[in-house]
Image (cartoon, rainbow, N blue to C red; front, side, top):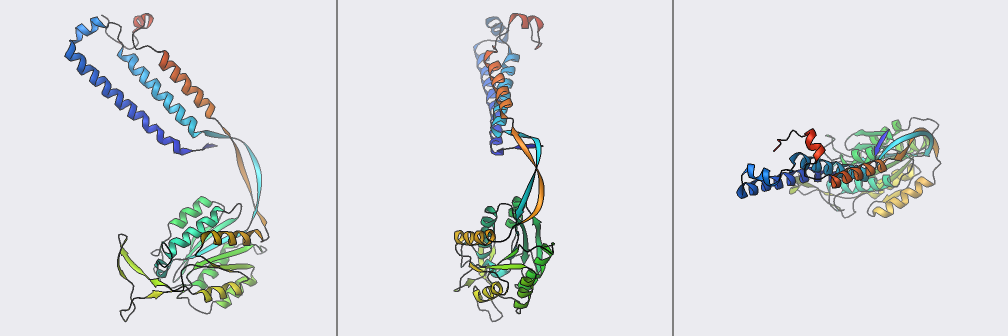
Length: 346
């Protein structure tokens, strides 16, 4: 098992081709300047011990030293042992509204981006809970199955947009129904569904499905994103607003946050309504909800205990650097006799 602790430092390896290029430019400049001073035969007589091969070897050693130091900064780690870690937590499903009304910019930068920011910050504060993601508009779609891979969850989250579902509307009922399939343990009581939406344009009659979810042990927490004042739905091309969505009468559509619907859903499902306008407050309330829920052991995972190996590469880099310093550019007598670099003898 192998791990790189900080891959950012790998960018420093770009310095190696830069050094090689600069070296080549210096050699070219030296050759051209020397030709102006004297011809090749005279130069060989003036500096008979000059070794081009050893110059190249010195630059190779310098590059190897830099590469070793960079790898030491990255800190490669190798797994040395396995240990069993028992995880306890809550199964958390996020159902995110991706209907066109979520493009309204009454809350910056828009409702959908704000929703994604909220979920990202919530995930960042989780420890051992499992997460799943559902996207819904006119229908509901499973975006990410239940998992402990938070990095994957955030990656899928960032890819969500209002074009991923062709049917429009806000099928909250379908999202709640789909969330039941995420909780596959019938004995599980620590289930929570976070419904992030503006609550507008729903199908109606969703109280029954919310109550049914509550009977199955699913607690629904609704997070309202938007304002009661509302705003128009922009139609953009290449990030530039071209127009605003209009109704059949040619009037600009104003979409508003429907808090009452979201509060009613939360009430029917033993949950809570949270105003999504303040990210820090949302994260605090969500953390409080999860901490007060019963934890259940749902996974035993084999985790490698990694040991840092940077010291080997640091020592190797120092060795290459020392050899580079000690290696002289002129020919030595015994190397000259061996003629390792196949150079012409004067």
